[in-house]
Image (tube, rainbow, N blue to C red; front, side, top):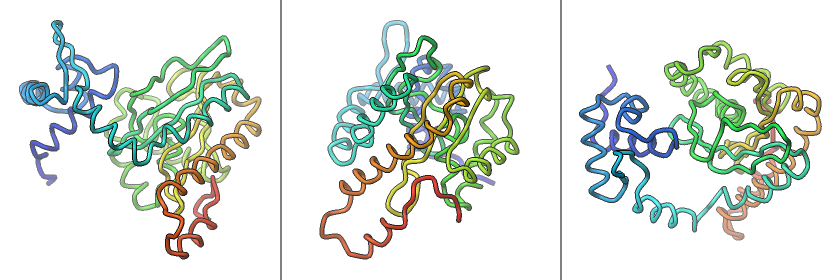
Length: 273
């Protein structure tokens, strides 16, 4: 039997829920976390008192100033958003559709940055802070698909318990999409969440080949299908650039020479082969 979450785990779950811009009221937090309303209310009160959450006169909640101070410290170390920002801008310049950076967070995928497209019809169903279960969405699926096999299976089990808002998807569908993505080297996630819309994505890998995020283009499904090869090539090129920049940031120049061998083995979009 799974152990009951500790108070710290419950508080962290509330903070993760508040990072979604659609989660503003106590009832939203309760639904997003699975906590009963009384517990969610108590956790919110504590977080507000400590400055980790805010509450306005309409009893709408948000992320508090203490979180931003902690985030500022973290961003001075390695900020994937900063490394990916030029890539997002180049993708929009090349294809005119919305470019998205996705990062994983405790079994979910979070949109941490995006550059809006300039094409007349845009993908407006994703925003910075949007959270989805791993496997729901192009970037989210790219992160899941390139995890090590054992972790991928475990995360997929977790995802299947969170698919209530996505009735078209189930474990078998996501598993099939993962297999197809690894075979082609990129994700196509079309019409699963929004009719006529979707995304194409590739993982951003670290020097050991583990996904640290994903880069994607969200657009009308027809626009993705008609330019799939060009989109995939550009996404992989930009993801490799981000991987190189990230590696230079986290590994000092005089790091053990063995890491050079690991770096050389990373190939963006490779599967289990």
